[in-house]
Image 1 (cartoon, rainbow, N blue to C red):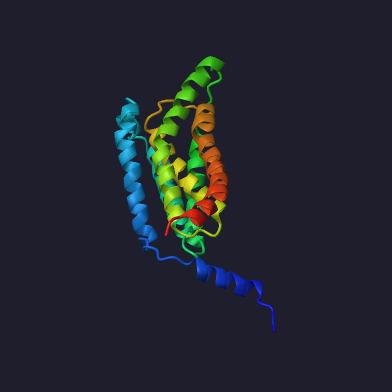
Image 2 (image 1 turned 30 degrees about the horizontal axis):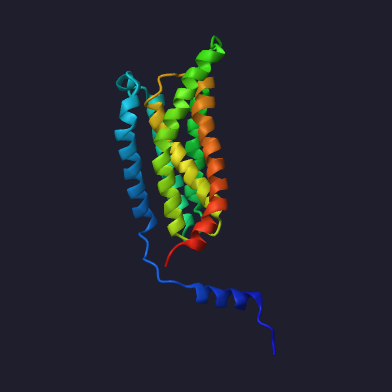
Length: 221
């Protein structure tokens, strides 16, 4: 008698563990809900931190291009994160190319900012820590929302899915923070605005790889 292969054992285990689940909304619909959550947080929380010169800043073409590019990148990253939770999904080259292009535009516009060499360490970190605290407050709900949404799906690459979620949440929070922080200086923006996006993405990837499989295996019927 032929011994069952590992594929047969896997299929038998999946059939045994199969449970009825509620059908999820399409990723595009879930993205709209998430963007509404981001907008609600930005209005309710971010309104307290809005820079006094925002109206004048919105008249700057480079600022508008930067914000628009990051909004597109953040939205597409969130969509790709939700799509990654769909088994068998493959990333579109057009979408990936658009994300790379928009992030490149944001990076180039950041590099055009002036460098202020007169910072003292106390002042530099005083303003920077304030921005970090505001970023943490603004990103918490959108980030957790996306991770929970991924948990309800079936991401095979948990780390990659969570990394996309982190990049999306921190990316859109970057936009909100640009509407809150008045400091237009390269070192400040790089350390306290751009770096949190990179660190948040890496942290999200680690948390996703560690927690998402456990959440999925322990989710109730």
